[in-house]
Image (tube, rainbow, N blue to C red; front, side):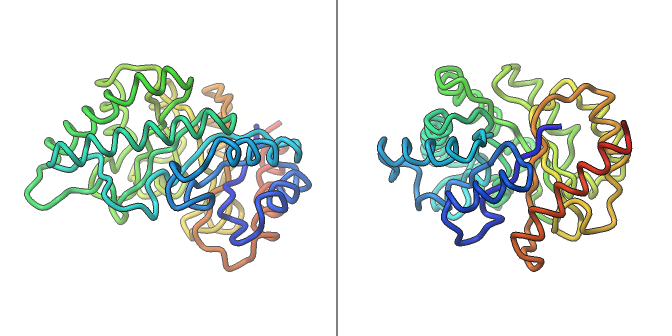
Length: 273
């Protein structure tokens, strides 16, 4: 497994300190939330992007890519009935893809539940059509930057659009681009009636990226989810991408979350042989 961790786990720590600590724990990748760098990605100059890339590299880490793409922004929505809003969102996602390329990353994890949920008066079918339009229009920029947007199914508690892996795979197949693929998250998959291992097997051919966490919103090993069957399924499908730790409850503190999450995953991997 290639293990990474999301940088917002470290709160207000400077990026250099977070990267150094992650590397010391055994991670080899860092995944960046754009809002931790600037209010808007367009605020980041070429010089600032170069500094960030060098900071990551100095720690011996790879930049995996970006996630929480539209968090803490206003005016963007991939399923909005207003074509102008969708057009503006495509343009901004294109800027995010350029930032990802500038930082040396590849994956753009698209979760952003608030910026895809149903707008009053819009049907799920209409929303899905809008998603198809937005991500299809994004493909030329993804091709030019050699990046991949990984669509993330989320639980019905978080959104009402793309709430299962199967639904998300159908949209990916409809778009039919190697630059639009699937992201799976343990917490989100746990909301489905299908066992997580079965979801992984069923959607393996679209799988680009993976987030490790627990239903208690903390890291792997901090809750009740057994990662044994999960890692066995990833091995079965020959998954070769990153496994990134993403948490939402930071109460244990960044040091414990970072250290104990990777120690648990390494132990599970070793037990599976």
